[in-house]
Image 1 (cartoon, helix red, strand yellow):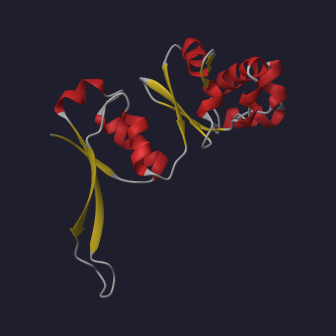
Image 2 (image 1 turned 90 degrees about the horizontal axis):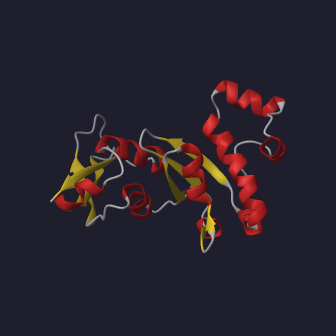
Length: 177
């Protein structure tokens, strides 16, 4: 499994000069190191996990989101494979595994889970263009949730909106109906 640190460092538990530099500069965190160590042990038990690449680890106060290459989750979960559970035990925090996607619906569904989204609407808002000939319309994406789903959200609305922006680059607005 490809992780934030090299395989040698993950296996030995000691960081080489390059990985230590990444840690000191803030490019990676202690959480990345912990996840890499767990990944090495997991891969010994489940060799298909070698096909997985961890793209990014995003820490939030209530959970850790692990962003994976598309098609990777099937190698980490199901049957006895329980990579997310092992990471949860080590970090004492909820863990969400998510595959990178350009599809905004998939990104939002994964981030907002276990809450169920009833709709995603794109509206076009007219704006005053400072220069003639430039587009005078902006898109705005609205995520609609039933009021009953509010308690199921894994974090605050602001935190979830920021996470969607970080992963997809899209600005969203959340409404309860």
